[in-house]
Image (cartoon, rainbow, N blue to C red; front, side, top):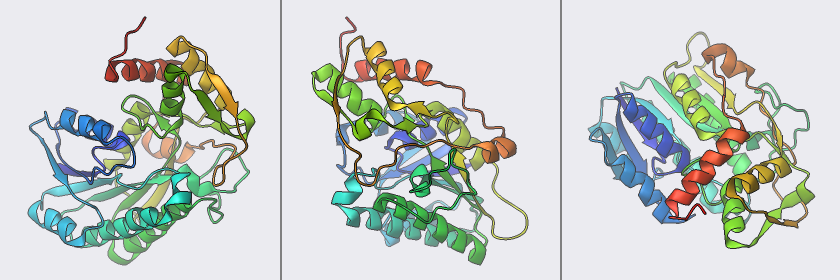
Length: 327
């Protein structure tokens, strides 16, 4: 089959594309390659994918209706879309909210309209986020919990994606699945996320900003586990009565103290961090923890990578990517 992956030069999109290619799929990857973070990292991911004969890269803004419709018309063999392109980051949404509406809302709507007119489409899988749980205090977060108290614009846009997707599934019968990701980390990770920020600061001798005075818990999920879950779900579109739309949590099913996460990075790096404790950031939450029973029951999803294993693998990649001596 042919799979369209949006955000293919992004962190998760790159890994998903590699996994699809490894199992013999044809992959069309699209990405706008914006400069939200170091674009050279995006170029490096894209270039690795382009070594595969079965991979085609197209630079497109998912909000460009004409370009996306032309892509779909030129590739009628697309059976699955894994839509991962989005404006990421909670804190940046406080500075540039319009970027989130343009990419995460308008761009998502363009994708749904495109799906509506694709005759051979079997499944539309899209990225949501654990951020939709917002002000919820009950742990772990269940897909049955309310998600009507977002505490950031980013979270609000992801909730809008879920609502629009349900509407399109109901109205037009589009099989769609939303995946609420929980703090993904690993090789080729984003420089704006905790693992990269902390490790970069440690090696540069800069203080690490640690919010809420370190009283944070996160369901850190290694990217390989995320990819296995995405592919399993993509292969099994929803069916049955009602709108063919569903949402799953996809996480490690284990909430770790942030300070332990930092300790693991220090150990793998062989250096101590200088901690700069700060108050809670607007739009952030003190804890995340995924109840993954729904995706476990339906697809047998079982994350297998603890931070004790995942962090050293991330640090090893970081050293290699940056050409660092291991001494």
